[in-house]
Image (tube, rainbow, N blue to C red; front, side):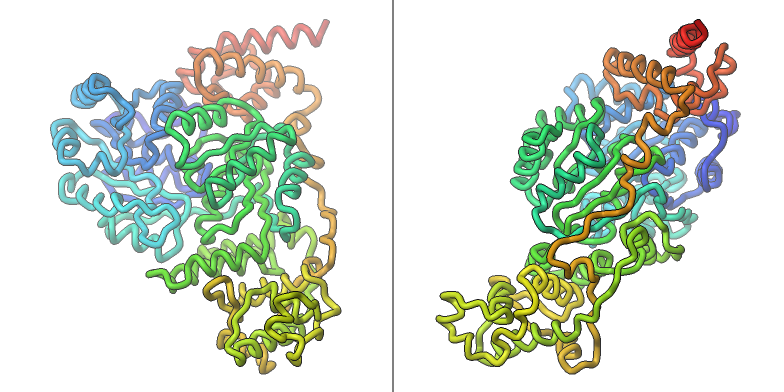
Amino acid sequence: MNNKRPQDVLREIFGYHEFRGFQSEVITRVCAGGDAVVLMPTGGGKSLCYQIPALLRDGVGVVVSPLIALMQDQVDALAQVGIKAGFLNSTQTRRERAAMELAYLNGEIDLLYLSPERLVMPETQELLHQGNVALFAIDEAHCVSQWGHDFRPEYLQLDVLADEWPDVPRIALTATATVATRAEIRERLRLADAEMFVASFNRPNIRYRIVPKSSELSQLVEFIQTEHAGESGIVYAMTRKRTEDIAERLRSEGVTALPYHAGLCALERRATQERFLREDGVVVVATIAFGMGIDKPDVRFVAHLDLPKSIEGYYQETGRAGRDGEPADAWMAYGLSDVVGMRRIIAGSPDERNQTRLLNAMLSLCETGECRRVEMLHYFDEDTEPCGNCDTCLQPPVLLDATVNAQKLLSTAVRLEQRSQHFGAGQIIDILRGHSTAKTTQWHHETLSTWGIGADLGDTQWRVVVRRLLADGDLSVGAHDTLRVTPSGWEVLRGNRSVQIRESVMESKPRAATGKSRSQAKDALAAVPAADRKLFTALRAWRAEVSKTDGVPAYVVFHDATLLEIAGLRPTSLTELAAVNGVGQTKLERYGAAVLEIVATQSLYETT
């Protein structure tokens, strides 16, 4: 065991003065040989919880990560602070793997990254037994959950660690897990005696907004151009083709946008990932395959054009924004097609009951008239007050009693069923509006008693009613997107339950947002005191050159927060520079002289 204290490593290696939250308690437990399960939001500092114990304990820390494509970036980032790390995966040549295996056996590295698939291979376990393992860190531990949003079956085999290395501490880490998923992590990884550390799931710097879909691509373009022009972001869509179509539309509007999905070759995916990490202002349009483990602090927005399957997935994906603690947006366009599509996908599936539960919670978040953050955190068994930083807090919705309209629609669906006819939303809405078409004439729907009783509402408004009934489970989706009344829908028909809908979404044209956008309120440079802006800009320009020369993302050199502190402090010596958060010993030696020269030059320029 290393004689240094965790606080010494934190300061000398990573350049930070104090631990955040329960980092210190986790590190103390793992250093002492205890197991831990750690739930900490994205950007909360989970990696320090195993990196510091790996440096203090004898041997090599083995990190289980599902992200082969990111291992090189993780190793490069650690090298920037003077930590020797490596990985074993399929991207290496036989010679490279042999060299890394030898480095592990000789104790020449501090951390070794492995995928779960590689760790469960007998030859890998034999190699690890020949060396000295300091600890096992199981990252993205929610992947162990059968019902999780990133399930990896190989994680289920990681219980072998308890048998093969009973005396080596294990730490499982994730940013997202309900109470049920936490229990599953404990059970499947055999961590019954592990101490549980659960931080708040609240990310107060993220503004949550869900808007009704009208022209979704135009809405997305307007959102990016008016609020996040030139900034990095991620757009999530359900299918590969959608990602490509959206990226093409964004590029036509002048946005630097790239698609990312599993159908692209590994070289293309890697190139997209590299550009996103190293360049400013790149927007990646992706399936959920992108983003997990991406350590990019300045993602200013995450947008969804398709409904996530669960709140866990939504929270995990939106959590990739604003890791630096600065304001960021989680924006979603949501419509009837999302609800119908998701209901159709899960109908008849082996785990329909569980998927329905997850979807209902997600729909409740979309439809709520209360604070979205309160709704979401409640899902993770955390209570909080209304946040003041979501759309429903910034513009409290007026709720309309739409029970009569709901009863009209449900009555129409019942009458069609009585005729042994089943139709989708479009046909039902045509009947309610008294809109004659070839289809209504063919089926004699003009004779229904509900024909034309909903002429006071337009097509868009009726679709809002359908969406609400589907979200509440009052309608179910059958084959060919047909709609049927459920038992809970009959409760509405009988008058035993009311239906409330937000006034704003029932309007023919959605209201324009009146809340200040993030870009109007504050952008990266506007947040810097006027007296420090020129120096801050000069430091960022220098960082960009270093990033390009060293082949690493700019934030790996120094975060904006570190440059901002340097600009305010204006250090004149290495000792003063060492007092800045984020300036560890290795970075001080590597970059200290250059930083001091920039500070001195800019200060001299300002005084002459």
